[in-house]
Length: 217
Image (cartoon, rainbow, N blue to C red; front, side, top):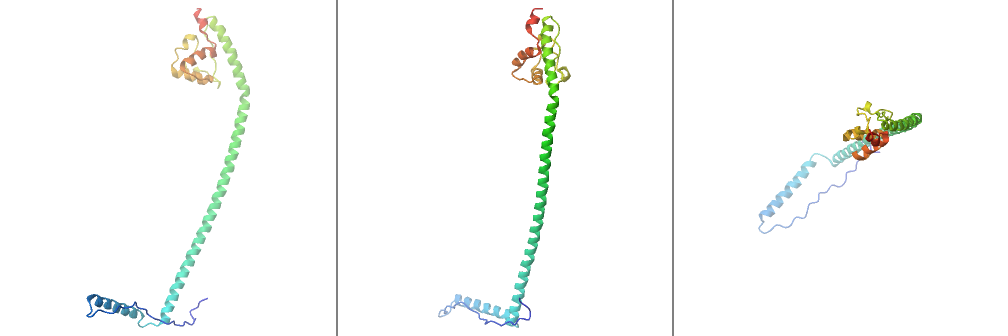
C-alpha cells in the first residue's frame, strides 16, 4: 500500500524532439516558421518544469491518480448500493405479483363456485318455467280455436313481454303488427333468432297463437 513516506526515485527525464530537417540555403520562410515553433515548444516545456523538481511532479501525478482511483471506488460503491436497492424493489414487486395472482385465483374459484351454485339453485326454477310455458302454449291453442285471446307466455328469464315494454300478442293478427325491433326482442326473450319474417312465423308456433283458429271466426 502506498504511503506519503515512500521514497521516490526520480527517473531520467528526457525530451525527445522530432528530427529537424536541415534548412535551405538560404533559409526559406518555412524554415524560419519551423524553427520558431520548435523554440516555443521547448520554452513552454521548460517553463512548466521551472522551479519544480521531478520528485514534486511525480508526487502530484501520484496524488492525481489516487484521487481518480478513490473516485472510481466511490462510484462503484454507489452503483452497488443502487443495484442492491433495485434488487430489493424487484423482490418486493415479485411478492406483490404473487399475492395478486393468488387473490385472482381465489376470486376466480369463488366466482366459479357461485355460478355453479346459482345454476344448480335455478334448475328447479327453470324446470318450473318450462312446465308453465308448455301448459300455456297448449292452453293458447285451445283459446285461439274458440276465438279467445291468448295468455302471455313468459320469457326464458321468467319476465313477461309486457313487463319489458313490448306489446302483448293476444291474437295472430298482433304478430305482423310488431316492428322489427319488437320482433327481435321477442325472439331474444324466447331464445331463438332469424330474420324478422322467420321470427314472426315462429312466434305463432312458440306462443300457440295459430292463424287457422282466427280464420274460422
